[in-house]
Image (tube, rainbow, N blue to C red; front, side):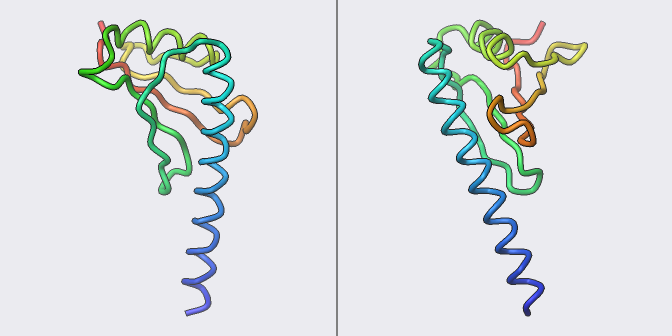
Length: 102
C-alpha cells in the first residue's frame, strides 16, 4: 500500500511540474505573439503534447511552424511531428503534432 501511495504522489508531483512548465511556456508564447495550440499534460511520459486546434485554427501549418521556431524544435523527416523541450524546464519534453504535414 505504501508503494502505491509513493508512486501516486511521485506521479502527481511530476504532473504538477509539467503543468507549471506549460504555464510558463504559454506566458512566454503570449508575449512573443505565438498562436495558441491545444495542449495535453501527459502523465505516462511526463511530457507536453500540443497540436493546432482544428477546426478553430485558420492556419494550422503556420501555428505548427511558429511553435517550432519559438521552441527551437526538431521536425521529423516526414514533417508530421516536432520534438524539443520546454525552455524554462529542459527536463520536460515537448511534442507537437503537425495536422497539415506535407
